[in-house]
Length: 314
Ligand SMILES: C[S@@+](CC[C@H](N)C(=O)[O-])C[C@H]1O[C@@H](n2cnc3c(N)ncnc32)[C@H](O)[C@@H]1O
Image 1 (cartoon, rainbow, N blue to C red):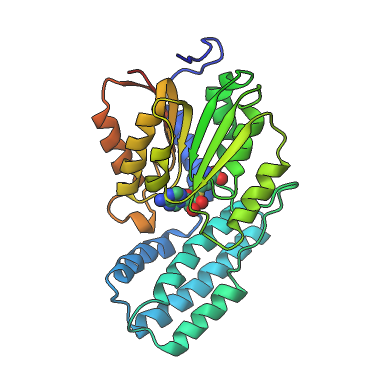
Image 2: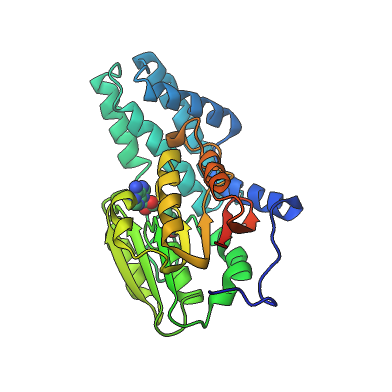
């Protein structure tokens, strides 16, 4: 059984000021939309799900989108928002416009206008991260926290890690360079690699660029289809960061639990992210809590804030 070195392992952090401060700091970067725009955004998304947006609605939304895009640019120019946060704002607005372009009542002319905004104002660009090709960074704010809680893995040989949802390899590269440092280690990366056309080539570039002793096994496909190819109870650390729809999280968590060795760490992302439009009324927290209730008594809590980390006891 792999267990943390007592002197290096931080005490559980399931609440309190530190956890709240961390949630607030991450929330500001992950959800940079203004409160007014955000409230309307959630309403529009629920209407999109019902295919009930009208042409009139879409004109109102396009005006609001233009103002919000300008606000994000102003905040960046004035140094109140970083590039990562602006990129996150763009992802949300891109998802909104993409949904609008599929509404039955929206006219062809408006759909052309939407495509123009997507191409001109919302194209996917590389962030300025030397050596890497990444377009979005959802991981940098976890680095210190992960180093504090999981740094004890560094230097241990023959570890097997699994990441469900690797995107362009940002978190994978961090695990490779910081935790999987000893000989014989392996990282398995599972992803559909279909969020944008350059995603998989960026992932390959980044994995190639990182200096690590570990090998990387890339499994392309939906986690629900590929995870059963992995040997049960063979993994020491699992990062569950794939689909954020609540039912998929439950499925990934259940599969991850089977794959985890006794003593393994499981981390679930976006526990405190209650505003994902694609998981309407069933945010990640609901799914993660439901899973934790199912394994009550069989795990130790490591921390619970923006993310939840546990270790498997039995
Ligand atoms: C938030 S991103 C992962 C970010 C990455 N862990 C990081 O920190 O750099 C979520 C990823 O999950 C992938 N994904 C979504 N649904 C999936 C599924 N059912 N199976 C596998 N991957 C999935 C997406 O393609 C996307 O790359």
